[in-house]
Image 1 (cartoon, rainbow, N blue to C red):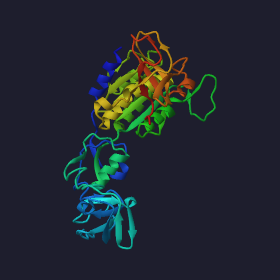
Image 2: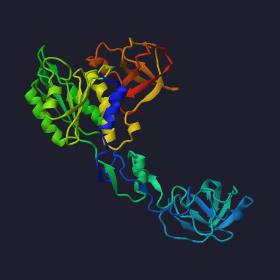
Image 3: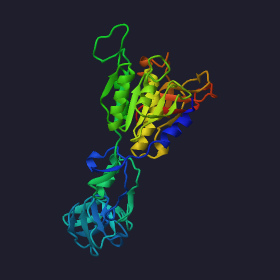
Image 4: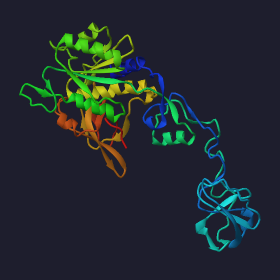
Length: 403
């Protein structure tokens, strides 16, 4: 067995961002920029009003109250440019270009009107309530660097500079293959000797929650021939293949031999952590990587979030150091474990006025899906930290994006 840090290092050494594709901006949410977005013009492109009010010469209102004559109006999107001359003002709406001659905007709440005579009750300073040309960015300046994950606000920034198409890394294609002759479809009747396939739906949901599309999974019998054939088929099309179950040393655990028969190179098999110890990673000639996850549901989810998720993030173009989400938060209660190896303990996030705290969730085994359904992720416990008091900051690995 190797340590979790050693395993993660091997994962990251064997994946690299996928080639860039051009996507319409409205389809790019969650993708990672392969090329920086630059401003196509100054932002704002002209001095603009930050308020509804009046464009004025500050020198005309050195003492207030003072009255100026209304000489025109400028609305957002209007090309009109009525000049503000001494003794005059121009009505202006938020977002409109500041007319020539004006050097301040007075908000409408600080004025009163009598026909075309506007009385000002507060003396402005030059620059008040004006967004200056290029104060956000100059033409050619980088708005979003390469490697940016496109969020709603990032997409808004790209749209503001006219980028209808963006160059992003392709999202990896993933398939889930669940092994086990005892497995049946979720809706089917099951005997006492059978199990419903919970890993397929759970892992597809985990993929979806992190922005990776895989709504389908397959179930394979415990047959070396069947598993070898399906792996050979999968590596021709998919970037990442997840094989669940059959990775331990039992008589019918065929996955490691199926990988070898399919011409895969095993990079590691066995990680010193609980749950999830039998985890396997392999690489194929075309660049596809395969992860063999243990069949116990909580082991599979831990393995997914510890090693598969970082691989998917890196393939998508995410910076290596940002590929495994984690937060540090105080423990809600005392916690202890036996040590020996890295342990992932189920936990949930509880939100308080002071912030988030992490509350351990009691689990009977790595097959305890009832406990798993109450968890938001796991606390990572080192072999040395056997007793942790309430209030201590701990590393928490979320199983879904946190608010």
